[in-house]
Length: 124
Image (cartoon, rainbow, N blue to C red):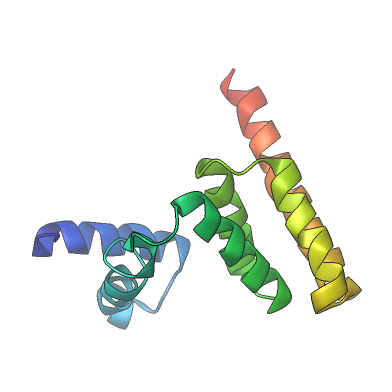
């Protein structure tokens, strides 16, 4: 369990990626900390983080949540998913979520992959 200071630091890291109005920024970040990660569903023992990432990418893609999808594709790569696995799940969703869903998901994946490539080239 995180200390109040650790929770606030983590909450502010979250709200850098998921902005909120300044008036509620810390409360928003703490809510995410407590319900999503690390003390929420992402911290549960039933599924490895890698698989949670794949499920989250699928859900965000089919719900068309492009901002969150972009973040979670990056997190999926960080959690050990390959570009092929991410692309395959998005393609799989064409059948279950519709082709427009997959078209948008593929475009977002490409954007994330291209940004990673540019970072790697710039950092080398």
